Structures are given as structure tokens and as C-alpha cells.
Amino acid sequence: MYKKILLIPALLGAILSAKAQIPEDAVRYSFFPQNGTARNLAIGGAMTSLGGDINALFVNPAGLGFYKTGEFTITPLFALNNNRADFRDTRTKSQKNSFGIGPLGLVYGAPTRWNNKNSHAVSIGITQTANFNNTTQYTALNNFSSFAEQWAEEIAKSGRSINQVLNDRQYAFGSAPALYTYLVDTVRVNGALQVKAATEYILDAGQAIRQQMVQNTRGGIYEAAIGYAHNTNDKWYWGASLGIPFVFYGSDTRFTESDTSARTNNHFKSFTYNDNFKTVGVGINGRFGLIYRPKDYIRLGIAVQTPTFMRMEDSRNTDLAVQLENPIYTASVSSKFFNNNETGRSKYTQMSPFKASISASYVFREVENTKRQRAFITADIEYVNHRGSRFGSDNEEPTENEKSYYRALNRVVKGEYKGNFNFKVGGEVKFHTVMGRLGFAYYTSPYKDKQLKANRMLLSGGLGYRNKGMFLDLTYVHAISKDVSFPYRLEDRANTFATTKNTRGNIIATLGFKF
Image 1 (tube, one colour):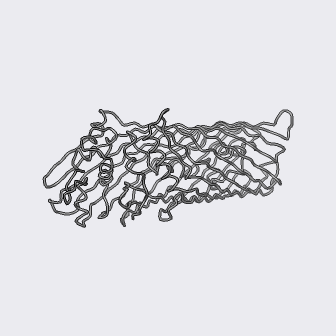
Image 2: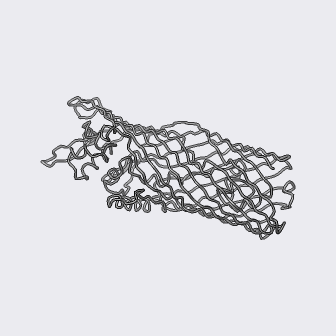
Image 3: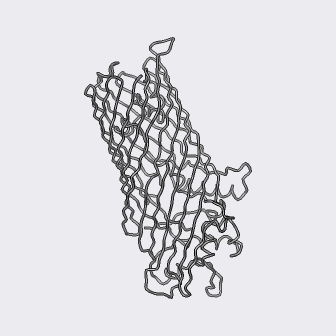
């Protein structure tokens, strides 16, 4: 599959020494299903109007206002990942399992001194909002484009000589190694000097090269938060929380191209490119929410999350091994060779999207004694403004090149992404101390282009047990995620991409104690 995607000029690889940010980074930290307690995930993640769950701290802190006692909660989880990638009409499967953690923390609520009908609550907790542990791989024949062409493009548009590129650290992670190993070189075509990748000789002859991509990702986003909520006459609940997310993302990517023919005079045999990349960061955000009970059995909620401001640092090392033919030539080199024997590093800021949600819940037989309540249904509609993601320099006095780069990158993000709506619905039936729950959630695509198919769908069910101040909830969530993966991006040629499908089975348990 391929499509023309507008890219910023050769600035993509030439401004930051470790890794120029790419459009995909804009949704990496925003397009993922909500995490939560086993109870919350069993009902599809709908939380905005329900309350009474520690996960309200990370969704709508007004829900903490339903607490009038204390509670401690811990939520471990296990994820079984099965992946499928379709790349140029070829399907590849992979699998990777991982552990994670949902909300862990404390909530304490109590009536106010001046009015027993009013109460307030405070909470502190930590949760894993995103889990990046996975493996993606695909392989296929390609007679349309080559991974190495991105470096040829960059060199051709840089206006630099070969020696200048080889001695400039900003090209250490791709273009300089490609020149050094002669994977990319200058040639004369009809008397004009051009920059050409060795793989292009095969493509020009109408033949295909075999491409293989294997990427192992790891890490997650962990958010610590503190919140406060107030309840007025069991009618109005409002709350606010402050979140501090910590980002840990790592990827080890291996991309290989090889000649599929038996010919030994077409200049190219194979190359393998390894990219070891890591991002760490810390941010800050705020959440504000309101829940209103016009009737005892009806709850209406609204919540807003501010954009998350994050300071990020990338580190990167790459190596390239090349085999050429006619004449036979073999070479390999690391990015450290061009970077003063150092790991490449880049610091920048990123603003993740604004979020807002509205919700309604209906509680059957709403009575003060929660043990006598029989059931509830609840639904959320959430909006996430992915096109509002922004990048910026972390330098106090950024250069004009940095300013131009980030302006261009932010224009691409604004042009490629859109705001999306997420829908969540669920319910619970209570049998005294035992509860049964079902839920469903659907996350729509963040991409403007309709050819880039992406969505998240979650089907969930679980059981709960509550007795004598202790509770235990067990949930299974079957998550199906569709997305796209660009192995490389070209400016002068249409971009090829893989469509990916991740099927994840999540097993979640929450153990809690009232006090």
C-alpha cells in the first residue's frame, strides 16, 4: 500500500543531532485506550459521571466526591499481544506478552465539619496510562521504493558536498553512514551529477527488493496524580487533580533490504540498518470535572483535561552494514563514528492534546445503602484534539533553523491529524456481595486521511466481590487496535506503509480495602 504524504523538507533529518521528531510522535503519547481499575475497565472505561472509583482521579476527579470513607487500591494486569501486519499484499504475524499496572493509591473522604450533608475527599495515586511493550514486524517485495532513498533525498537537498555531509554530526544517523558505505553515492546521469541509492538500480530495472522490518518497543507512560473533590448535598460534585506523567519509551528497529535476483551485476546485494532509540520525559497536566444529580437515580458528568506539557530527551545510536556487487564491496559503520564516539541526544518540548468528555449514568434503585443498589448503566463520549499536538525547542534561545523546523513540523501535524471521538458504555448488575459487569468502547481514527485506517475497539466483562471492607474485581478486556506503520518517509515519492492490527487480551485484577 502507498500514498502521497506531504512532508516537511530535508529538515526532517538535519536539525536535531539525535532524531528529528516525526509526525507519528504526535499520536504516540495520546492515541491509546484508557487504563483503569478492573471495575472501570469491565464497564468499557466509562467514568465521567459514575464516580466512586479511584480511577476518577485520572478521568474526572469530581467522582472522588462520592467517597465518605477511606480506600486503598492496587491493580496489576497482564497483556497478551498478537500482532498482524499487511505490507504490500503480504501478511506477517508476531506475538509479545507483558505485565503492567493500573491505579495504585489511596482515597480518603469524610463529611465536612460545618454540614453533614456535604463531604470532601482527597486522593493520591499512580497508574500506567500507556503500555508500549510490543513487537511489530513485516516483510514483502517492493518494486516501488527503497528505504535508502530517504538518505539520497536528504543529501541531494542539503546543498552540501560529500565531505561536508560526512563531517557534519547532524547526518550521523543515516545519510553519513549511507555515503560512507557507498549505499548512497553520486553518479552522472546524462552528464548531470546526481545522488543515487544503490538500491535504485534494481528498482530502475523494474525488479523488486525484499524489505523486512522488525521493531521491538518497550516502556510506558506512568502518571502520578493528586486530587481533591467536594460534594454539596449529594447533588453537586466538583473536583480537580494535578497529574505528573513520566514517559519511558524505547525501540530497537532492524530494517533490511536485499536483492531478490540471482544477478551479480546490479550493484546492490543487501543492507541492514539498526536503530536503537530511547525517549524519557516528564510533564504536567490538570483535570477538572463536575457531576450533577438532578434526580437520585441520574448522574450527569463533564470533565476536561488540559494539554500535557512535556520536556523530552531522545537518545539514539544506529549502525549500517552494506554488501554491494560489481565490484564486490562490504562495509559497516556506527553513528558514533560520525558523532565523536558519542550517543546522539536531543532535547525538546511536546504538548499533547486537550481532552474533554461528557457522560450520563442511570442507577437502578438508587438508595443511600449501596449494598441495596441493584444495577447501573453509564456512557461516555470523549473528544481528543490530536491535531493540537505541538513540538518546540528546549533551548532558551533556539536558532532560526530550529524555529523553522518546528514550525514546519507543527504544520504537518496540524495537516495530518484531526480531533477524534471515543465512545464508552457499560453496566453492572449487583447480587448483594457479587457483581457482574459488561462494557464496550470504540476509539475513532486520529488521521484526516480516510485511507489511513485506524481505530480501537474494546469488549470487556468482569466480576466483583465486596464484603466486610474488602473487595476484589477481575476483568478481561479483548482489545482490537488497527493502525498504520510507515517504515520510512520520502518527499519526492509516494510513501509505502503497512496496516497493522493488534489483538490484545488484558487480564486485570483489583484488590482494595476500605478503612
